[in-house]
Length: 174
View (cartoon, rainbow, N blue to C red):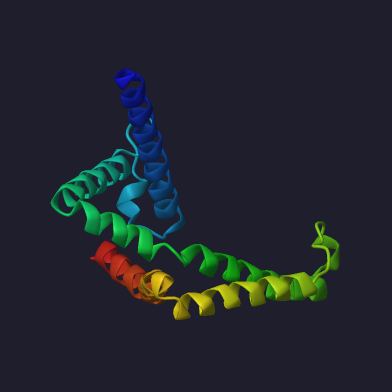
């Protein structure tokens, strides 16, 4: 039984490493990660992206060894409401993009959401109710706060992205 469990865990690890390295490679290809990660070897393998993902994996194992309860709880709490933030942004994007698409090119709108825009507004309201209720429930408050911190950090990085690109282009020109 132990061999089956170890094989399954190693398979999950391999799958996660493959997915993470390809995602990092794709982000670099789009200009959302360092361009050095776009480089592949002669067989088309993004070795640098794989190595970075491996280093992060090893650092995660070390952190889990140093503070097993703290790291797990931080990761769990910092991602608690992030999914709600993502769905809220998707709903808001659907409202604005569909309105714009209906004005500019209505023939391009092939898939139409039923009960638009009422269902979208209901979804937004429901997500906001859940987020506000998390603020008033002591058990959920830390998830909301850490998720907000995560969202703010990523928002700041997004806003600083043009500065990073400018620095990289200046470095390449020199």
